[in-house]
Length: 193
Image (cartoon, rainbow, N blue to C red; front, side, top):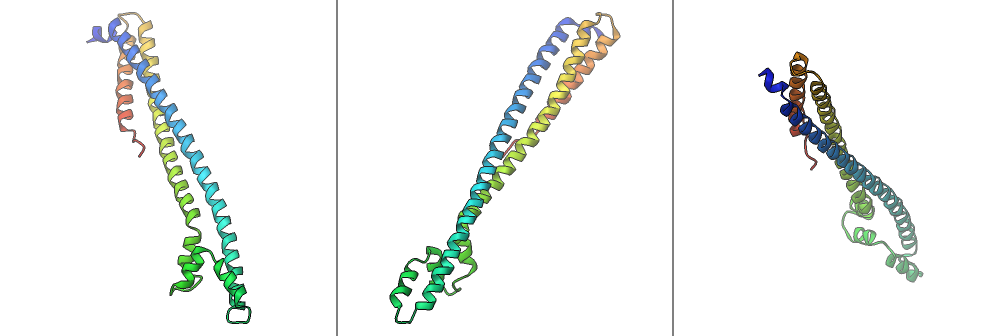
């Protein structure tokens, strides 16, 4: 057993396997970080767009208040043409609310007016959540990379020691153990949905 772990072929294979696995995990980590960035930027964009839509909706609601007030003041008077003008300029949401039984300033009216903002905010939340999942994945991949890099250091030191050295076998075993831990940790990393 000692000869197997001290063997140059075993140590060379361990160096190659740990090097490739460490490089692959590093690449996966970089890709996860890139995706995290991408989704956080999308989240910020949607959040900004949602805020802009919310402000636009507030302006539209204020305009509806003014149109409704002017319609109400002029409706049923000798200035009916002015009342009709204002009623024709109601927003679609106000016109729908005006014709409904719930009343003009119902929750349905405000939901309709803020629908675009809500949609952007929902998209923003989803993007931030996905970015967070990529962040967690990247962190876990960094841990795997740390473990496999440690194993690479162990096998490198083992290869520098003499063939009969007990430390060579111990370092080779540590390298094998870190490879196993690295693979187990890698397989346990959740995927991003």
